[in-house]
Length: 404
Image (cartoon, rainbow, N blue to C red; front, side, top):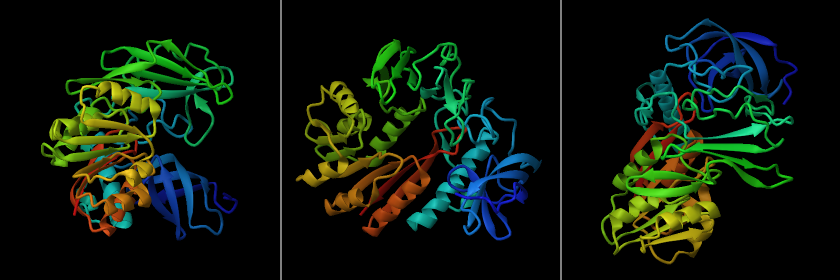
């Protein structure tokens, strides 16, 4: 993307927050997406990219805050910011203000992409998750390594690594000793602190050498939700926020509205946390199908749910699984990846006449587009909430119940 016609620096007044962690500003009719700014600030920025001379937007980073928002604070993350790590792109925002900002973004995306009015942007806010606060909430992290074997976090949209590892998302001691160790060049370092307080460090080899070794602890981490335990590979998906699995599981069980003997589908089910909650609601006379493409996640689900004979664990794509289903579900729960479920999957759910859907999304635009697709099939939004599951960052988790 050429920015040859862009000035190197500009002085701008920012407007509303945009999806993705920037604020919207304008210069001579052109939109400028400004990172590291809050709404209604006067800032000096450096243009970093965009659509070029004939395009409609530029990207820019804040160089100096000339008139700060009342919501701006000293950064809570010592390694984040312009020219630093890309880990905590809202570390300079008061945490309560950040939750309001995220809620406003979700409301805007739902209106624009989903055709649904959730709340006024001025009244929307993401709810906090647990009681840990804005720092020290993360249980898993992945680091990359440089050519000389040093571990680090990436700078924003860069292959360059920041070798300081004291990100504020991490609890104290989680990465102790990692920076002092020389790792295989080009490898990924996966670190997890599980629900028994044990740290696990697993090294995944480069693409050329796909070898995985355990440097500390074990390959699997023990995770607990309610009274049930899972052994989940450190390299597999598990909710990053320590309190998120219990919160989401309880909420899914409540919002699903199941009764004994009913059938539930747990789609993109991972290790089967939601399947366990759904199985408890439908009981032995009911049926739960949980589907995921990951063999590791499916193995964890089969082991953790082995005592629940009415739960079927299927390793397959959601689209193929839905195409092959001949029975009808009373409820479907979906927790798709960041890209969302998409048209094909939602078309299949509608064709299967699933009357109640609990849909979870970790990216506001994808979530909003999926809500719009459901509404196009006659589904109505019964409940919808946003959660600040990734404090210090612009990321947000959304959960909705749709019925028809």
